[in-house]
Each structure stands twice: as C-alpha cells, then as structure tokens.
Image 1 (cartoon, rainbow, N blue to C red):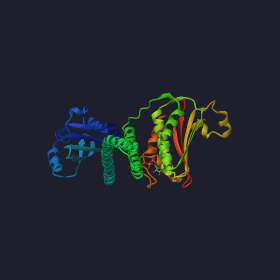
Image 2 (image 1 turned 90 degrees about the horizontal axis):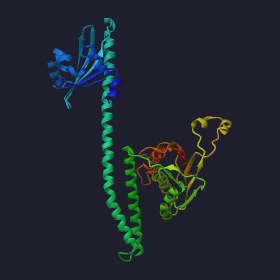
Image 3 (image 1 turned 120 degrees about the vertical axis):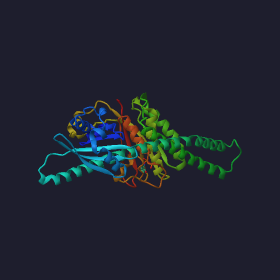
Length: 384
Ligand code: ADP
C-alpha cells in the first residue's frame, strides 16, 4: 500500500483528528521537509501545517463539507491544498500540489489544470481503496464458501455410505425399481461430492496452499489408476474409454495426486460432453518440447537443435463430444467460466487443471471445433 502511495506524484498526508500524522507518502514527506519538518513524527498536521485556519476549517469539514481548498504559503513556496475529512475513520486527509509561479495571464489555466490533476488523484485514490476493499471481500467470500463446502463433505460421505450399504442388499432385498432409484441417487450424490471437492481444491489453490509433492513417480501407474476409477462411470453412460499409455515413458519427478487431479478433470469433462455411444481416449507419450526460442527458429535450424531425448510427456484426452468453438479456447481455462450451460459444473475444472499443470512448469491447451469433439493436451517436463 505504502509503495503504491509513493508512486502517486502528489503529496498526501493523513492525520487523526488530533493532528498526529498516521500516513505520509514520499512526496508528502518531501513537502514536510520543505516546510522545515523533516521528521513527520514530530509535526502536527493541524497546528503546524494548517496553522491558524485549522479551527474554522475543521468545523467546516465536520459540518459536512466534502472538502476545502486552500493555499498554504511557506517562504517563497505556495501550495494548493485540498483538505478532506473522512468521518468514518476520523481522518484529516491533505493533498498538496505546489503552485508554480505563473504570469497572471495564465493563472486561471494553471488553476484548472491543478484542479483536474487533483480530481484525477482523488479518483485514483478512491479507486485504489475500492479495489483493496473488493479484494478483501472476495478473499473472505472464498474462505467462507470453502468452510461451508467443507461442512458438506461429512454428511455427503454418510449418505453415500448408506446408498452403498442399501445397494449391497444387506439391509433387505430390493426390487429392480428400488435399485434403479438408489443407483441414480447415488450417482447424484457422487456428482455433488465431486463439485464440493472441486470447490475445495480451488479455494485451497486460491489461498496459496499449492505445494507440490515432487517425487520420482511412474506416470503410467498414475493415469492407469485414475482411469480405472472412472471406468464404471463411463460404462454407466455407455461411453467407451480407451487408454493408451506409452511404455517408454520414463519415471520422473511429479506430484502424483495433482497430476491425477488434472487428468481426472479432463476425463470428467470429456464424459460430460460426450453422448452415449461415443469414445474418449486417454493417451500419454514422450514428447520433444522445444520451448519458444526453438519454436520460432526456421525448420532447418530446428532440426540442428533437435533434443537428444524426449524432455517431456504429453498427456491428451480426446472425445467425440460436442466440441468447443475456437473463440472459447482461451477463456474456458479461466475461473468460473462455463460455455455449455446444459451440463452441471462450476467452471473450475479446467482452471484447476491449468494451475496444477503450470505449477509443474507445464502447459495445457485445447484443439477443438464445435460438434467435432475436443482434444485437451498437457505437457509435463521430465527434468524439473
Ligand atoms: P465446468 O465443466 O464445471 O463447466 P470446466 O472449467 O471444466 O468447468 O470447463 C469450462 C467449460 O469448457 C465448460 O463449461 C464447457 O463448456 C467447456 N468444456 C470443457 N471440456 C469440454 C469438452 N471435453 N467438450 C466440450 N466442452 C468442454
């Protein structure tokens, strides 16, 4: 905050109602030095700076004037000063501009320019205050929602547990109709659990808790395990899930859970957007990732710089679903952005996947056309 205020090229001083200075930006301190007060702790804004005008001025301000403008003269220096009273905090705010000696002919112009500049500064200051306030409110909202979501987890786990128990038949035989209803309820419950976890993951990332547990891991195990967890959901919807994990992928350092989460979010989406009878393919293979310098080089040069061995792994999830129009390819990776309103979700799956992949210094993107299916890719560097 202090750094930002120091960037304002106008002197700014704030005191409490007794005149004790509680804030002075860089220009404000310079101004005090000009007035012969190099130490802002030893100066009283009301009695030393505003001097004799102070009593009447404060009365005027407290009576409801938005601000008062006056000229402060110190030796050969003249300063145009705006005094504001912030009743909520009981602060006196001073904004000071030096008045450059001018011929009387353009004094009026000078005043107008000064006024305009002052207004700009006031707007800037108000905007800054509003922005900081909004940010804080937004943070509080995320924390509140996260704790509410957390509270939902336990009852949901209990409900799901009872569905499982009922479906095993250990509490009595069920008719086919009852079984169907319970299966459907369990599915909705699972989706709710996924939404809650998605939100919790997001708020954890938002509050800066993303710490990677980098260990030497096998990506094929990681993705295979995740795909097996999803196979039942695919079967239920009648969507084929093909998994093709290249055996030449070496072990490398990555966060097992986080990569699983990123890939699971892509698989979740592909299942949601692919109609029954469609196919989803999960592929992982070694990749030569030539970063930007090599990418812009002409083809011949690129060949010369060819890497001796793959330096990354490419994971992709393709589906034969609804596809995504090109104009949405960037924005879908942003927080809470949803394009397709016919499916359930919060617009967080891709935003989370992007954060997780980028935390590994990887990149994520989509190739798709409307109604022609989509392929989401992400790259993970092998050497971190
Ligand atoms: P959510 O799925 O909760 O809406 P996401 O961040 O996972 O949020 O996805 C954002 C949007 O991207 C979705 O609303 C959808 O429109 C689009 N999308 C994501 N994956 C696919 C896909 N495989 N096929 C079609 N559209 C997709």
